[in-house]
Picture 1 (cartoon, rainbow, N blue to C red):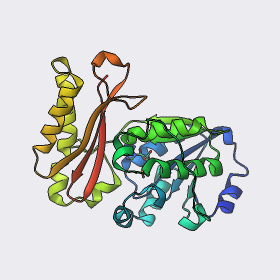
Picture 2 (tube, rainbow, N blue to C red):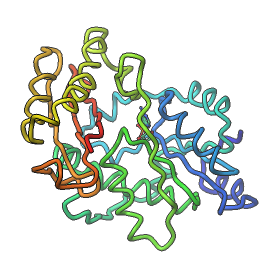
Picture 3 (tube, rainbow, N blue to C red):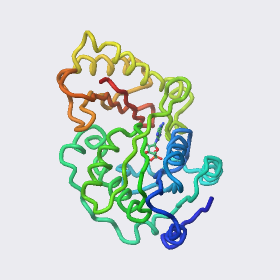
Length: 278
Ligand code: AMP
């Protein structure tokens, strides 16, 4: 495994690589088994795998969140070596943004709801960094976790505006044994909030069970109340949406793919998760 920190070192490494068989996994580090599942999938489908580790400041709408975001470079490298990554790109902020990125992306309605509505500017920052990374790495395939369900729709929409774009490969959510979706932010939970957090997935699963007797709006309310009944958790939103447009659905028959997406505050930590309904 080669670790590089600059664009020119990355270019040098990629010079001899067959880009048509190149896979890419962008991450913000503090890696866990969810990230590694993407690396594993990339290895299965590609000859060479690049992983980037970069905490992208432009996607944080809250400076405190950026400051507190977990970082563990040494352990990340150990995990990536074990997982079989070929190249790790770990740039610093100056390397990624030699000049401020002032691009403004237009995602129509896609970024006006859920994460987009509650974290203003977040997806614009995601698009800035992902487009820069795609231009540098130029992979054939890029692997993204369904944990960040709306992000996949945003990245796909962003790719429509690019000359050359990789195939976006969505990968399933990896969960802890108790059902909590793995996240770098889980490390920031107090023991009490960590114990409460699996209630998010439990409530969403209970919501899926109610589909036969409730409308989507009723299930939204049911799941929201169930999560909020734990005093350590506070729902920011729980929305049942069309899996492509992210627009709320009125009936279960309105769409071929329907997802329930949640953001929940657990103490100082903001958690997201989602589940398939249809
Ligand atoms: P992050 O480091 O949080 O920006 O995540 C990097 C990539 O890993 C994104 O595509 C995430 O969706 C994905 N990811 C994060 N957590 C999980 C998980 N529990 N299961 C699957 N993929 C995940």
